[in-house]
Length: 340
Image 1: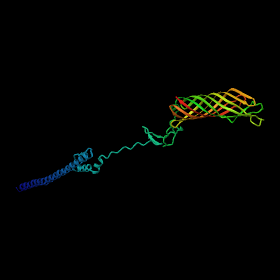
Image 2: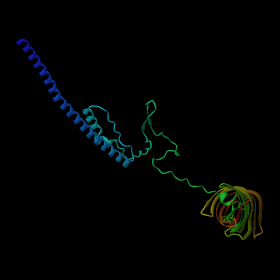
Image 3: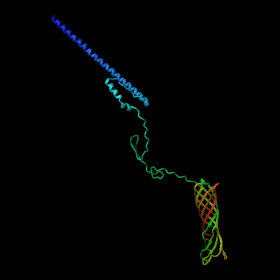
Image 4: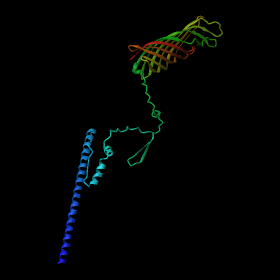
């Protein structure tokens, strides 16, 4: 009986301890679990409030800057992982770096230098260098301003393709004319006087080049003749006449608004007639066709209505005529010509 009582007592004690242990564990474990769940809820609410404020600030910044708001991607996880992720995503420097900056203008293209390395599509380097040149039209000092080419003026366009120049002038022969027919065995000398000339020239212009055909008449008087062996000059009179036809080739240059300058030279033929009458009774006459040459320098100015006034100097050379020696005369001409 005592053994049975003892067995039931031990059994009841074990059951009581088990119940107490279980009840006590539940009592102490449940409040702990309930407290941990409440803290998690508070912490989650706090984080949600922070996220809401961050989203609101991001939306305001986006409206001010005119850009898209910063995205917030929050992964579900544990409390610690959520805290670490929120700390990383809410970093102020990261948020500032993600904002768009001011527009940056592209730098202007720089010209390729004398020596610069470029690369082909396959990566092969290519060195650019200025090619040497010996052409004066291409080779020039770097940075030198290009020279402006002056426009060449044109006589044909400014004055006309054709011209006609009548003229009159003064003929200045040498002071003496050599004569071989005095019978003294040496040349006699005949005094000459200033004469006159007149003529007409007709020409054609090609750009600034000119070609012309001219007709002229020159007359000069003779005076006393000096014969070797006779101390005093013998009284005499006579004249020199030249009827000339010739051609000239020249070049004209316009200057100023209406002026021009021309130079020309040519040759021709003339009918030369020389006569000398000595008061002692001797007379000498010679007439031949001779060769002539002349050089001309002219200066003109447009006076209006297509007319040009001009002044010219002309050197006329005439070959010998019988006993009369060759002569070179200086002619000063004045005229009024027309262009058409």
